[in-house]
Image 1 (spheres, rainbow, N blue to C red):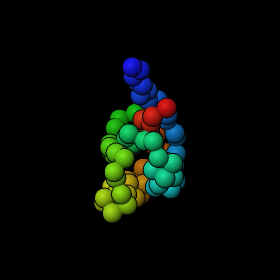
Image 2 (cartoon, one colour):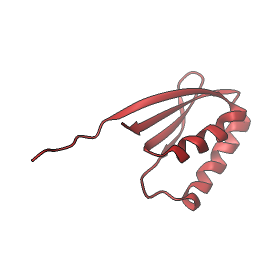
Image 3 (cartoon, one colour):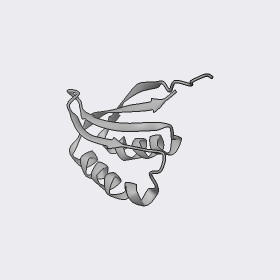
Image 4 (cartoon, helix red, strand yellow):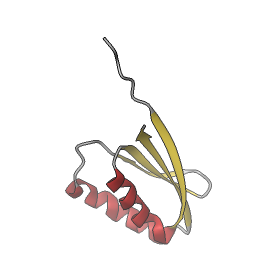
Length: 85
């Protein structure tokens, strides 16, 4: 019997505040993502958004609204994505 082990990888994107919401929506649409962490430019986590396979659009609306509000406050930030390989 063989067991398939899931591996994950972390990607980091540097974006301007005005592009934050657009990039997060793009990443969610790509799929295979466990979580998205938005950090300030010093690397301090500001928002951690856990995602699962069953997450649907209506559940994401409050999180996307919070990301939109953050975008207005941040000039530069990092998006750290944990995804399946």
